[in-house]
Length: 215
Image (cartoon, rainbow, N blue to C red; front, side):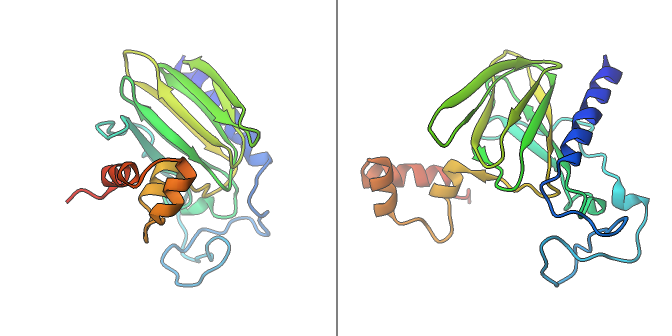
């Protein structure tokens, strides 16, 4: 079963990569120079490359799910694998405690496709017409979240769950809706939030306090 899962993961990574959203590369490789101060759409290339630039073992073990939401995301993007620069693909592993939630969020630069390694999840995304597209998925199954749309995953079982997620971008970016609005620096003005959510200032302050950094 492990080999079948591995083949499935590799297959959808290849599919995602062939439909890359990032700009096409103009050379064989362009390993990211993450220390460079030059700002480009991507990262400048470095010359002293090695096999280590194309390797990452961080998805081999579960992430720690003792978080507020009960979920942990381990990214495998260009910031972890410099060799992904200009290749238009990346991965992540998401682990969920029982009842854990990957809160509503978006990836502004990529479509996401998830393959369930373990457990069962309730997943869904919301279209720009405010239509919820949702489904329960289990081990061995796949679900797709279109680029830029708000989506979520929740462990609906009594055991831990995990997925491998693939993106058609070397750095898809993530915006958690709640954190973006209530933990921005500088803060989003209260009068924007109170009117936008049709609540009072006390409610806004209460939510902001929950997202404030712990001292």
